[in-house]
Length: 412
Image (cartoon, rainbow, N blue to C red):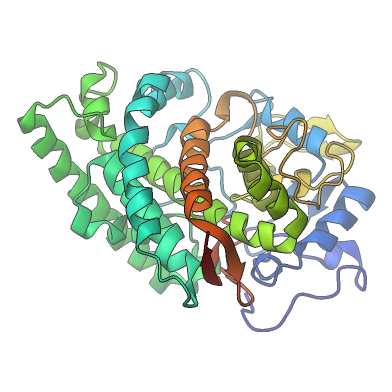
């Protein structure tokens, strides 16, 4: 993939010449017009060629809901990405019932309301520490000092992971969602394999240490150990690794990039910032609006289990089907003024970022809680988090990430 040249003009070439898997449209933040054209002209679109092979694109909100809710015709096995997740992993997000249901139930207790309530106090203490140490009056990278810092601290807290080694969690997460097509060839794929082996080794050691302590901790590993369905998960390394990656990536990307996107959105829509200053109670509805507006994961992939007619098109058994959440979240047929950031929408959770059906993100309330706490503490301290320059976005067709956002905070 060309990582330098820009994408072609979305309306200057035939639709069949556009590669909707090309990560440059996300890096360059030019994706909107491509998907507007797709929704209008070919909402169920077959792309014959891509670095990932041929696939169907589903771009309208209601069509995505229909596909996402129909696991019998559109399977999550063996992958939910266009490329490949790390080898030797089995995660329930890439499984169908009944195996999916058993595995999901086993880890669902991790984000049960009582556990979230216990986590909140500790998470807030981490947020407070970060916010109190920001360099007031200086320009700094919000992603580094807040989004990554906060996310790695939260992940370390949630896993009971060694705090001084917490940056490994972000490293493993970033490699897990990369592909050779995006990262730059097989050498990067080899790096990922090595990193995933290190991840499994570290968490296997952590499992045994935690088991020996026999504590009543509410960290994720201890909760898994106490659940009879996952008490022996460490002895099933493919499943243990798969579920670890799922929890790490889920806890990393949604929160990290939504924390940054919220700052960006409020600066792009200053009237909404005024609303927030006037009423901090709007944080509750702003959080899901941030997650919709950013859409941290651009898509999920399915595989047709049989020949299916959908949207007037013939989808063949075995075809890849990509649900473009990033497009559905900007579909004016389902969401009024979808390109606008509106923190007091009547139904802010009406979005696709967490998916639908049996695979709806089980950590959605945890992600929202973390963002809510962060913005509650931001608004207690700062009248403005001012964006001082253009953001730098990552080259990835699945994770809509931001690497750098220069900001300056203004105290109350």
